[in-house]
Image (tube, rainbow, N blue to C red; front, side):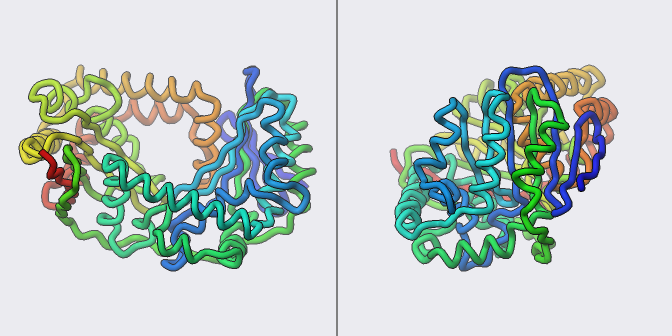
Length: 417
């Protein structure tokens, strides 16, 4: 039996086995679907590091009734886009297709999520692909520094480990590692199916019930290791590169923290995607000390982190780092003026509205939101929350997150001339 609940403009069902469905109907010609499991690399033991990501690769390599070729071609032969990804906390399969293929997509999602066989020959090939992926990051210091920075921030904790794993762990994996991790973490109570597309909800319910309703119920009895200890660090590594890369930041708020939107707004003012961000104007444009500079805020279920990234020539690292800290200090000491605050809010609201125009972005966003909490905020709720932020809220957040004594810095120092 299915139970119905309306959540902030979204339609929501829960199957008897605990699998959740959330849907928003629209009139667009293209529809989007995601199956998200509440498990990722932070749920791995040290010896398992990288297995969640390996599973994401292997679910396309064959099921009880399909060879690898037929898994891919089943949707792509009718023009669908099929993909998957792994994060620290989620594993997601997603597809984009014409509305006529909803049932086809759901049938395939159920098959690969619950009936994959993980053939040994394909496993060995895919391990080589991932080893190449690990090595490719070493050739891209502007990407590698983010993984190393999280490892430094969350030192000794599973959430700090690289999603890809290490060369040694990936080489060690066999089929049993995969099966053990799935048995431990792929629970029906921890799965959300999210949909944004032009399909009647009653029809969608029937499709979901047919393909997922008979899967045995299973509850998650594993408890994630909480992150509760942070020690600021500064680390410098010599790299055989022409350019230097730097990350400066701190631990920040978890996914459902009441101050989250204030930090999102502050991050946008400081180093968001707009060319009018303070970091871009005052460090890149005014002084030319960075060829690339921005800031970001990443949230997890029980913690998060904020960081400023910059890439520059080795001679400018110290000056650029000093200017970044100066900008952070300004936000700790000086309130945004009334006009500045109004403009910042409007810019962020429009950016969010543009991002939600992507049906896929919305689908992935509501899937994650429903994994993390029992409701999905409507766009109107988010806008209302942003509009209610005042300058004292931003000052308070800045002094919590940008506190100089709590900042951690990682530098990849280029040594080529």
